[in-house]
Length: 116
Length: 111
Image (cartoon, each protein chain N blue to C red):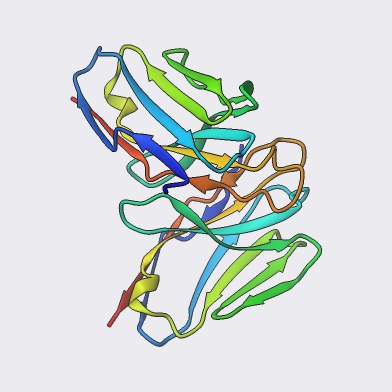
């Protein structure tokens, strides 16, 4: 069983379209994240949720809207896609808000978004 | 803000040691981490060090921490071709609830 699973793995779309990426974790974790990895492999946090509550919103355009229907799911919806949105988007989870224990992050395999 | 800095590339021969360096930004981080990213995959935790330690050894991996200089290093002994990947250091500044990842070092191991 995959611990953190994302769909789709690949997404190719035109500028201006709206798309969603879904993420599910079966680890029983409280906290989930979205990270963006650009073509230079730089990894930047976008959002985090803890028990369905938004904790971090890291200066991301409001075209990006995360949604957490329950603590096992965190989806990312992107409106009006732009060329600069092309990247690999990683979902991750952690047991809690990193305040306790070693705060290990568990990553999904990534969703490669290409905007044409 | 400042970036967590790493050198971009490192190339070593199989069997040699690899040393990957990282300069982090926030001395309040309780733990510092090394993650490995293989091609087409997500990141996986490789090892971590508690901030009050200077060194941690875990099989072929040795982590050194210099808090004064905010310098973290990862040494891989007897590097194998399977170690070829991108390595990220990361910090979690106290109270921020997030990881700040380094710029990543691409390690290439030559047979």
